[in-house]
Amino acid sequence: AASSRPDTRASSGATLEAPGAAVPFVPGVSEEDASCPDAGAESRSGCDDPIADGTPFDLWELARSWTPGFCASGGKRTCAKKECAPDAMVPALTLHGLWPSFSAPVERAEKYGSEVKAPAPSTPRRASRASGVFWRQVSARSADSAVASSSCFWPQNCGMPAWMRAETEPSPWRYDASLLPAGEENRRLAPAWFADALGAHEWPKHGTCASWADSAGKVKGLDQEAYYRTTFDLARREGTPDALVDAAGGAVSLSDLQAMFGGARFVALGCTSACELVQVVTCYKQGSGAEGDPVGPRERAECPCTGVRDSHYDNSCAEKHACAEVKILSPEQAGCGGGPRPEKCAGSERCCPGVLGPACAEDADCVGESGCARCAHSGHCTAEPSLEE
Image 1 (cartoon, rainbow, N blue to C red):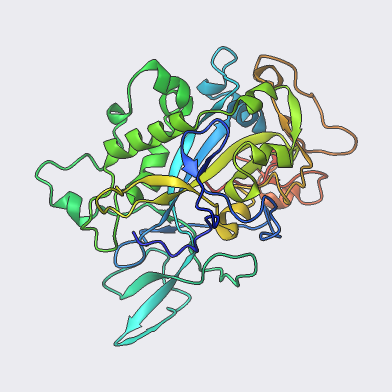
Image 2 (cartoon, rainbow, N blue to C red):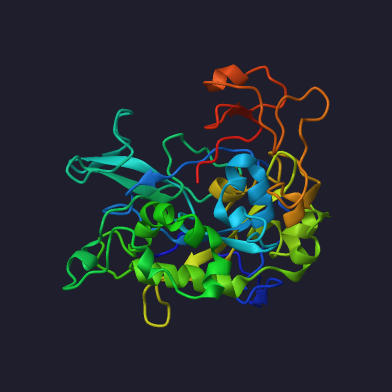
Protein backbone atom coordinates (compact mmCIF):
# COMPACT_ATOMS: atom_id res chain seq x y z
CA ALA A 1 0.00 0.00 0.00
CA ALA A 2 1.34 3.39 -0.91
CA SER A 3 1.64 5.70 2.06
CA SER A 4 0.38 9.28 1.89
CA ARG A 5 1.95 10.17 5.21
CA PRO A 6 4.51 13.00 5.25
CA ASP A 7 8.03 11.78 5.95
CA THR A 8 8.83 12.63 9.58
CA ARG A 9 12.36 11.20 9.65
CA ALA A 10 15.12 13.36 11.02
CA SER A 11 17.43 14.94 8.46
CA SER A 12 20.32 12.80 9.69
CA GLY A 13 18.41 9.64 8.78
CA ALA A 14 19.41 8.09 12.11
CA THR A 15 17.29 5.19 13.34
CA LEU A 16 16.62 4.87 17.07
CA GLU A 17 14.99 2.28 19.25
CA ALA A 18 12.49 2.93 22.01
CA PRO A 19 13.41 1.56 25.44
CA GLY A 20 12.19 -2.01 25.78
CA ALA A 21 11.55 -2.32 22.03
CA ALA A 22 13.34 -4.18 19.28
CA VAL A 23 11.44 -2.49 16.46
CA PRO A 24 13.27 0.52 14.98
CA PHE A 25 11.53 3.84 14.59
CA VAL A 26 12.47 7.37 13.62
CA PRO A 27 11.81 10.43 15.78
CA GLY A 28 9.75 13.48 14.86
CA VAL A 29 11.08 17.00 15.03
CA SER A 30 10.07 17.49 18.66
CA GLU A 31 9.33 15.51 21.80
CA GLU A 32 6.51 17.94 22.54
CA ASP A 33 2.93 17.37 21.43
CA ALA A 34 2.26 20.97 20.40
CA SER A 35 1.22 19.72 16.95
CA CYS A 36 -1.79 18.01 18.52
CA PRO A 37 -3.53 20.57 20.77
CA ASP A 38 -6.68 18.43 21.10
CA ALA A 39 -4.80 15.32 22.24
CA GLY A 40 -7.16 12.84 23.85
CA ALA A 41 -10.26 14.97 23.36
CA GLU A 42 -12.02 13.78 20.18
CA SER A 43 -14.37 10.93 19.30
CA ARG A 44 -13.40 8.93 16.21
CA SER A 45 -14.90 5.96 14.38
CA GLY A 46 -14.13 3.30 11.78
CA CYS A 47 -16.16 2.08 8.81
CA ASP A 48 -17.06 -1.29 7.37
CA ASP A 49 -15.15 -2.62 4.35
CA PRO A 50 -13.74 0.67 2.98
CA ILE A 51 -10.73 -0.86 1.19
CA ALA A 52 -12.41 -2.70 -1.70
CA ASP A 53 -12.32 -0.30 -4.68
CA GLY A 54 -11.42 2.40 -2.16
CA THR A 55 -8.27 3.17 -0.16
CA PRO A 56 -5.75 0.62 1.17
CA PHE A 57 -4.67 1.15 4.76
CA ASP A 58 -1.12 2.36 5.31
CA LEU A 59 -0.68 2.30 9.08
CA TRP A 60 -0.83 -0.26 11.90
CA GLU A 61 -1.66 0.36 15.55
CA LEU A 62 -0.46 -2.12 18.18
CA ALA A 63 -2.69 -1.84 21.25
CA ARG A 64 -1.55 -3.40 24.51
CA SER A 65 -3.13 -3.32 27.95
CA TRP A 66 -1.44 -2.59 31.26
CA THR A 67 -3.23 -5.54 32.80
CA PRO A 68 -3.74 -4.32 36.40
CA GLY A 69 -5.07 -1.00 35.10
CA PHE A 70 -7.43 -2.70 32.68
CA CYS A 71 -8.67 -5.08 35.36
CA ALA A 72 -9.34 -2.16 37.74
CA SER A 73 -11.01 -0.01 35.08
CA GLY A 74 -14.41 -1.69 35.11
CA GLY A 75 -14.74 -2.86 38.70
CA LYS A 76 -16.60 -6.17 39.03
CA ARG A 77 -17.16 -6.40 35.27
CA THR A 78 -13.47 -6.51 34.35
CA CYS A 79 -12.41 -8.32 37.52
CA ALA A 80 -14.67 -11.18 36.39
CA LYS A 81 -12.45 -11.81 33.38
CA LYS A 82 -10.11 -14.78 33.71
CA GLU A 83 -7.03 -12.69 32.90
CA CYS A 84 -7.85 -10.58 35.98
CA ALA A 85 -7.87 -13.44 38.48
CA PRO A 86 -5.42 -12.65 41.32
CA ASP A 87 -3.28 -15.68 40.45
CA ALA A 88 -3.23 -14.83 36.72
CA MET A 89 -2.81 -11.04 36.58
CA VAL A 90 0.65 -9.87 35.55
CA PRO A 91 2.29 -6.41 35.86
CA ALA A 92 3.07 -6.20 32.15
CA LEU A 93 1.77 -4.99 28.81
CA THR A 94 -0.40 -7.72 27.29
CA LEU A 95 -1.88 -7.92 23.82
CA HIS A 96 -5.14 -6.17 23.00
CA GLY A 97 -4.86 -6.14 19.22
CA LEU A 98 -3.09 -5.13 16.01
CA TRP A 99 -5.29 -2.76 14.03
CA PRO A 100 -5.02 -1.71 10.37
CA SER A 101 -5.51 2.05 10.19
CA PHE A 102 -5.31 5.08 7.91
CA SER A 103 -2.59 7.70 8.24
CA ALA A 104 -5.17 10.18 6.96
CA PRO A 105 -8.94 9.68 7.23
CA VAL A 106 -11.00 8.58 4.26
CA GLU A 107 -14.39 9.92 3.29
CA ARG A 108 -17.29 8.53 1.31
CA ALA A 109 -17.52 9.47 -2.34
CA GLU A 110 -19.84 8.41 -5.14
CA LYS A 111 -19.40 8.19 -8.89
CA TYR A 112 -22.01 9.92 -11.07
CA GLY A 113 -20.74 9.16 -14.56
CA SER A 114 -17.33 10.84 -14.68
CA GLU A 115 -18.09 13.09 -11.70
CA VAL A 116 -17.08 12.20 -8.13
CA LYS A 117 -18.82 13.86 -5.21
CA ALA A 118 -19.97 13.19 -1.66
CA PRO A 119 -22.97 10.82 -1.49
CA ALA A 120 -26.31 11.58 0.08
CA PRO A 121 -26.34 11.59 3.91
CA SER A 122 -28.53 8.48 3.90
CA THR A 123 -25.84 6.39 2.16
CA PRO A 124 -24.81 3.55 4.50
CA ARG A 125 -21.29 3.52 5.96
CA ARG A 126 -20.64 0.14 4.32
CA ALA A 127 -19.50 0.94 0.78
CA SER A 128 -21.36 -0.72 -2.10
CA ARG A 129 -19.67 -1.32 -5.43
CA ALA A 130 -23.08 -1.70 -7.08
CA SER A 131 -24.16 1.76 -5.94
CA GLY A 132 -20.87 3.35 -6.95
CA VAL A 133 -20.02 4.37 -3.40
CA PHE A 134 -16.38 4.08 -2.39
CA TRP A 135 -13.95 5.58 0.14
CA ARG A 136 -11.20 8.02 -0.79
CA GLN A 137 -8.41 9.47 1.34
CA VAL A 138 -8.65 13.15 2.24
CA SER A 139 -6.11 15.65 3.57
CA ALA A 140 -3.26 14.40 5.74
CA ARG A 141 -4.03 14.26 9.45
CA SER A 142 -3.10 17.42 11.32
CA ALA A 143 -4.35 19.23 14.39
CA ASP A 144 -6.16 21.89 12.37
CA SER A 145 -7.77 19.61 9.77
CA ALA A 146 -11.51 20.06 9.31
CA VAL A 147 -12.72 16.47 9.57
CA ALA A 148 -16.31 15.71 8.61
CA SER A 149 -18.40 13.50 10.84
CA SER A 150 -18.69 11.00 7.98
CA SER A 151 -14.93 10.46 7.83
CA CYS A 152 -13.53 7.02 8.52
CA PHE A 153 -10.36 6.61 10.60
CA TRP A 154 -9.79 2.85 10.36
CA PRO A 155 -11.16 -0.06 8.32
CA GLN A 156 -13.16 -2.79 10.03
CA ASN A 157 -15.27 -5.85 9.21
CA CYS A 158 -13.75 -6.29 5.75
CA GLY A 159 -14.88 -8.77 3.10
CA MET A 160 -12.72 -11.55 1.67
CA PRO A 161 -10.19 -10.27 -0.91
CA ALA A 162 -9.86 -11.73 -4.41
CA TRP A 163 -6.47 -13.36 -3.76
CA MET A 164 -7.94 -15.46 -0.96
CA ARG A 165 -11.03 -16.45 -2.93
CA ALA A 166 -8.75 -17.66 -5.73
CA GLU A 167 -6.74 -20.01 -3.50
CA THR A 168 -7.31 -23.73 -3.92
CA GLU A 169 -7.29 -24.24 -0.15
CA PRO A 170 -7.93 -20.80 1.36
CA SER A 171 -7.24 -20.06 5.00
CA PRO A 172 -10.36 -20.15 7.22
CA TRP A 173 -12.26 -16.85 7.03
CA ARG A 174 -14.32 -17.38 10.16
CA TYR A 175 -12.53 -17.05 13.49
CA ASP A 176 -10.55 -20.20 14.27
CA ALA A 177 -8.93 -20.28 17.73
CA SER A 178 -6.84 -23.31 16.71
CA LEU A 179 -4.73 -20.99 14.55
CA LEU A 180 -3.51 -18.94 17.54
CA PRO A 181 0.21 -19.38 18.29
CA ALA A 182 0.66 -22.18 20.80
CA GLY A 183 2.74 -22.28 23.96
CA GLU A 184 2.80 -20.87 27.46
CA GLU A 185 4.83 -17.81 26.41
CA ASN A 186 2.06 -16.76 24.02
CA ARG A 187 -0.58 -17.33 26.69
CA ARG A 188 1.29 -14.97 29.01
CA LEU A 189 1.72 -12.47 26.18
CA ALA A 190 -2.00 -12.40 25.32
CA PRO A 191 -4.03 -13.78 28.26
CA ALA A 192 -7.27 -12.18 27.07
CA TRP A 193 -6.99 -13.97 23.72
CA PHE A 194 -6.76 -17.40 25.32
CA ALA A 195 -8.69 -17.03 28.58
CA ASP A 196 -11.42 -14.62 27.48
CA ALA A 197 -11.62 -15.28 23.70
CA LEU A 198 -10.68 -11.72 22.70
CA GLY A 199 -9.51 -13.03 19.33
CA ALA A 200 -13.13 -13.82 18.43
CA HIS A 201 -13.68 -10.04 18.40
CA GLU A 202 -10.31 -8.92 17.05
CA TRP A 203 -10.18 -11.14 13.94
CA PRO A 204 -13.58 -10.26 12.43
CA LYS A 205 -13.33 -6.56 13.23
CA HIS A 206 -9.66 -5.86 12.52
CA GLY A 207 -7.92 -8.99 11.26
CA THR A 208 -10.12 -9.39 8.20
CA CYS A 209 -8.86 -6.00 6.96
CA ALA A 210 -5.25 -7.15 7.37
CA SER A 211 -5.91 -9.56 4.49
CA TRP A 212 -6.13 -6.56 2.12
CA ALA A 213 -2.94 -5.03 0.68
CA ASP A 214 -4.45 -3.15 -2.27
CA SER A 215 -7.89 -1.86 -3.24
CA ALA A 216 -8.38 -4.62 -5.83
CA GLY A 217 -7.66 -7.38 -3.33
CA LYS A 218 -5.14 -8.99 -5.68
CA VAL A 219 -1.96 -8.41 -3.65
CA LYS A 220 -1.67 -11.03 -0.92
CA GLY A 221 -2.18 -9.66 2.55
CA LEU A 222 -2.21 -11.58 5.82
CA ASP A 223 -4.44 -14.60 6.22
CA GLN A 224 -5.74 -15.47 9.67
CA GLU A 225 -2.75 -17.55 10.74
CA ALA A 226 -0.25 -14.99 9.40
CA TYR A 227 -2.15 -12.17 11.13
CA TYR A 228 -1.89 -13.93 14.49
CA ARG A 229 1.77 -14.76 13.99
CA THR A 230 2.56 -11.17 12.99
CA THR A 231 0.57 -9.72 15.89
CA PHE A 232 2.13 -11.94 18.55
CA ASP A 233 5.67 -11.54 17.17
CA LEU A 234 5.38 -7.74 17.19
CA ALA A 235 4.01 -7.65 20.74
CA ARG A 236 6.81 -9.98 21.87
CA ARG A 237 9.52 -7.86 20.24
CA GLU A 238 8.19 -4.66 21.78
CA GLY A 239 8.00 -6.14 25.27
CA THR A 240 7.36 -4.07 28.40
CA PRO A 241 9.84 -1.28 29.27
CA ASP A 242 11.72 -2.02 32.48
CA ALA A 243 10.91 1.48 33.72
CA LEU A 244 7.21 0.72 33.45
CA VAL A 245 7.52 -2.52 35.42
CA ASP A 246 9.59 -0.70 38.05
CA ALA A 247 6.86 1.97 38.37
CA ALA A 248 4.12 -0.56 39.27
CA GLY A 249 2.43 0.51 42.48
CA GLY A 250 3.41 4.15 42.01
CA ALA A 251 3.06 6.94 39.47
CA VAL A 252 5.14 8.56 36.74
CA SER A 253 4.77 11.88 34.96
CA LEU A 254 2.90 11.79 31.66
CA SER A 255 5.99 13.01 29.81
CA ASP A 256 8.20 10.32 31.39
CA LEU A 257 5.67 7.66 30.45
CA GLN A 258 5.53 8.93 26.87
CA ALA A 259 9.33 8.94 26.76
CA MET A 260 9.37 5.20 27.50
CA PHE A 261 7.84 4.73 24.05
CA GLY A 262 9.77 7.39 22.13
CA GLY A 263 7.93 10.58 23.09
CA ALA A 264 4.47 12.10 22.74
CA ARG A 265 4.42 11.79 18.95
CA PHE A 266 5.03 8.06 18.97
CA VAL A 267 2.52 6.75 21.49
CA ALA A 268 -1.08 7.11 22.62
CA LEU A 269 -1.83 6.33 26.26
CA GLY A 270 -5.27 5.36 27.54
CA CYS A 271 -6.21 6.15 31.15
CA THR A 272 -9.23 5.96 33.42
CA SER A 273 -10.66 9.19 34.76
CA ALA A 274 -8.49 8.53 37.84
CA CYS A 275 -5.38 8.69 35.62
CA GLU A 276 -4.69 4.96 35.96
CA LEU A 277 -2.88 3.53 32.91
CA VAL A 278 -5.02 1.09 30.92
CA GLN A 279 -3.63 0.93 27.39
CA VAL A 280 -0.59 1.75 25.24
CA VAL A 281 -0.82 2.21 21.44
CA THR A 282 2.22 2.41 19.17
CA CYS A 283 2.20 2.88 15.38
CA TYR A 284 3.96 1.26 12.42
CA LYS A 285 4.15 1.77 8.69
CA GLN A 286 2.54 -0.78 6.41
CA GLY A 287 4.85 -2.73 4.09
CA SER A 288 4.30 -2.19 0.38
CA GLY A 289 4.35 -5.85 -0.60
CA ALA A 290 7.32 -5.25 -2.90
CA GLU A 291 10.44 -7.40 -2.71
CA GLY A 292 12.28 -6.67 0.53
CA ASP A 293 9.27 -4.81 1.96
CA PRO A 294 6.67 -7.46 2.84
CA VAL A 295 3.11 -6.61 3.80
CA GLY A 296 2.73 -6.14 7.54
CA PRO A 297 3.91 -3.71 10.24
CA ARG A 298 7.36 -2.38 9.41
CA GLU A 299 9.33 0.39 11.19
CA ARG A 300 7.87 2.43 14.03
CA ALA A 301 6.08 5.54 12.84
CA GLU A 302 4.75 8.72 14.36
CA CYS A 303 1.18 8.18 15.51
CA PRO A 304 -0.97 10.70 13.58
CA CYS A 305 -2.63 13.43 15.58
CA THR A 306 -6.08 13.24 14.02
CA GLY A 307 -7.54 9.84 14.76
CA VAL A 308 -4.92 8.44 17.16
CA ARG A 309 -3.31 11.02 19.45
CA ASP A 310 -6.46 13.14 19.58
CA SER A 311 -8.67 10.13 20.34
CA HIS A 312 -10.43 10.11 23.71
CA TYR A 313 -10.19 6.32 23.61
CA ASP A 314 -6.56 5.83 22.54
CA ASN A 315 -4.96 8.84 24.22
CA SER A 316 -7.19 9.74 27.16
CA CYS A 317 -4.24 10.19 29.53
CA ALA A 318 -3.63 13.47 27.70
CA GLU A 319 -6.13 16.34 27.62
CA LYS A 320 -9.23 14.20 28.15
CA HIS A 321 -8.22 13.55 31.77
CA ALA A 322 -5.32 16.07 31.94
CA CYS A 323 -3.07 13.60 33.73
CA ALA A 324 0.10 15.34 34.89
CA GLU A 325 0.97 12.03 36.54
CA VAL A 326 -0.19 8.57 35.54
CA LYS A 327 -0.75 5.85 38.13
CA ILE A 328 0.74 2.47 37.29
CA LEU A 329 -1.33 0.04 39.31
CA SER A 330 0.14 -3.15 40.70
CA PRO A 331 -1.90 -6.39 40.70
CA GLU A 332 -2.56 -5.85 44.41
CA GLN A 333 -4.08 -2.43 43.68
CA ALA A 334 -6.46 -3.67 40.99
CA GLY A 335 -9.15 -4.66 43.47
CA CYS A 336 -9.74 -8.08 41.92
CA GLY A 337 -9.05 -10.07 45.04
CA GLY A 338 -5.45 -9.05 45.52
CA GLY A 339 -6.04 -5.85 47.48
CA PRO A 340 -8.71 -3.39 48.59
CA ARG A 341 -10.58 -0.93 46.38
CA PRO A 342 -12.78 1.85 47.79
CA GLU A 343 -16.28 0.88 48.92
CA LYS A 344 -17.62 4.32 48.00
CA CYS A 345 -16.49 7.42 46.15
CA ALA A 346 -14.80 10.31 47.85
CA GLY A 347 -16.74 13.45 48.74
CA SER A 348 -20.01 14.04 46.92
CA GLU A 349 -19.18 12.04 43.80
CA ARG A 350 -21.63 9.23 42.94
CA CYS A 351 -19.38 7.57 40.31
CA CYS A 352 -15.68 6.70 40.48
CA PRO A 353 -13.48 3.83 39.19
CA GLY A 354 -14.12 0.46 40.80
CA VAL A 355 -17.40 1.49 42.51
CA LEU A 356 -20.93 0.81 41.21
CA GLY A 357 -22.78 4.06 40.72
CA PRO A 358 -26.54 4.68 41.08
CA ALA A 359 -28.92 2.26 39.36
CA CYS A 360 -29.94 3.31 35.84
CA ALA A 361 -31.82 2.15 32.74
CA GLU A 362 -30.43 4.67 30.24
CA ASP A 363 -27.75 7.35 29.98
CA ALA A 364 -30.26 10.07 30.84
CA ASP A 365 -30.64 8.56 34.32
CA CYS A 366 -26.99 9.43 35.02
CA VAL A 367 -27.20 13.07 33.95
CA GLY A 368 -26.69 15.30 36.97
CA GLU A 369 -25.08 12.55 39.07
CA SER A 370 -21.67 13.84 40.15
CA GLY A 371 -18.80 12.07 38.39
CA CYS A 372 -21.08 9.87 36.24
CA ALA A 373 -20.63 9.64 32.45
CA ARG A 374 -23.22 7.09 31.27
CA CYS A 375 -25.35 4.06 32.11
CA ALA A 376 -23.23 0.89 31.89
CA HIS A 377 -24.38 -2.62 30.92
CA SER A 378 -24.36 -3.47 34.62
CA GLY A 379 -27.43 -1.26 35.11
CA HIS A 380 -25.45 1.25 37.15
CA CYS A 381 -23.98 4.65 36.27
CA THR A 382 -20.24 4.67 35.64
CA ALA A 383 -17.48 7.27 35.49
CA GLU A 384 -15.99 5.72 32.37
CA PRO A 385 -16.98 6.94 28.86
CA SER A 386 -18.11 4.42 26.28
CA LEU A 387 -15.16 2.64 24.61
CA GLU A 388 -15.49 2.00 20.90
CA GLU A 389 -12.57 -0.36 20.23
